[in-house]
Image (tube, rainbow, N blue to C red; front, top):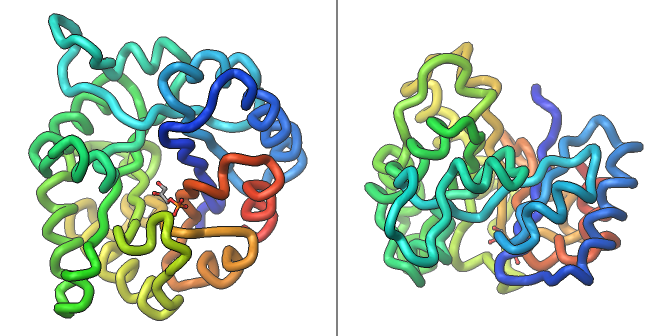
Length: 247
Ligand code: 13P
């Protein structure tokens, strides 16, 4: 369907010395037009990466639900847009866990991001306990229903969903391609229910969790996988481009 979308989430990594990696990723991506490539550096590098690249998309890893005001340490959607971001990652499990973000807050942030003109990558995913209990699909669908903002118009242009099982993040463990496929089919069915068959078809569903150049072909080949959200392996151009090449 759509072009595969490979997004690097640098998390709390990167100083200006890493701009050369962003530049190398951008240069190579100019020759790989069949793949859409993007990076989400920390806030401190957002503008510098934006200035450094021509081809790839640049996004933030979070934003505040408000427009402006007395929120020490927070950054609004319009501020990240102003810094050069075109999208924002929201609902990542690391923010849900370490910052107590619940579905309602994720939804409020997503609404603010869309209002500011940003695209969003909405993350979802179950814990190992929930997976072991056989409740992963129900949990993920409920989580998405509760954190999905109201979207009118061309949903494919503004929304990407990322399925990231918590137990697969940074662990080297991944679900089987079959398990990813069945989760992604369930997410696809929800998108059809919410937005209709035609408009939701353009929404890509990314897989995230221990994606590396060695497993990318298999994971990206799973049913309904429209790309990858990559953490650790996005920190060097060499490994990240290995994944882009597999897409
Ligand atoms: P890893 O690729 O390091 O497992 O991280 C995945 C992730 O959380 C991307 O958002």
